[in-house]
Length: 281
Ligand SMILES: [Zn+2]
Image (tube, rainbow, N blue to C red; front, side):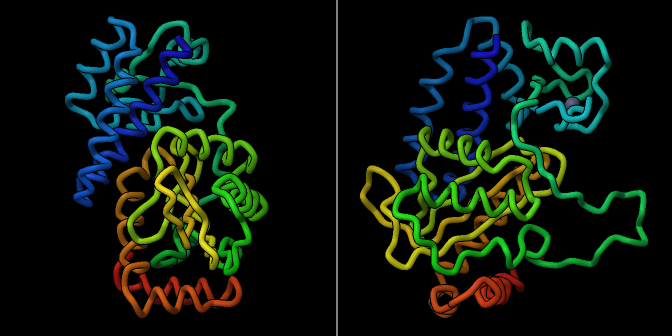
């Protein structure tokens, strides 16, 4: 059953990426995503295939991680007996509230960043724009990496060192696993490697700017901007919005030039903030 769950996770990930590709009008890559999804769906056992078809017809997010005993899809508590079954992963268990298939992710990275909770509203910081998702220490103005592997591990380490994720090595491993399924390279000369299901905090990203460019995938095309993201289940829709705004910043001549000209983390952060402040709110 664990193998089937792994396949379901991959299907969900590619389906979410597909939605973004459709929005961007990237027809070639949509077709590539469709082929990947079809191949993965073909590996599902008949019973699980039926369950997947039924749930995914109504919910693009048909799978939800169980986090601290709660369904990350709807936030409701999973009954103790069901939670035990989710942990064993011998059978598929669905959330009694939202109907999503639940999975346990004990080995996966967790967001180590504590976000302001609803309880202490006096302390809720009034952060705006990209400050909600990143910070100057997560910016690399001169990324030396020569390969996607090096770029992803440099940025993963940075996210762990700054307390955004619990395990940088695991984040890098999962991001590379995702990358191998379908390249995240975009037309803007950017790549957006990411890991979904990083629960416990909010969406976070790190940016590396490579001046030489990094050959990202089989296309042979180079990328200058690498945006690595850790995405909680609840932040999926937000991720797409954030990426489209960042791509806008990389596309516009003036903001692209300012981002490329930055010599250190602080300057890069300011350039990125300025390039996105009117878009991301
Ligand atoms: Zn639920």
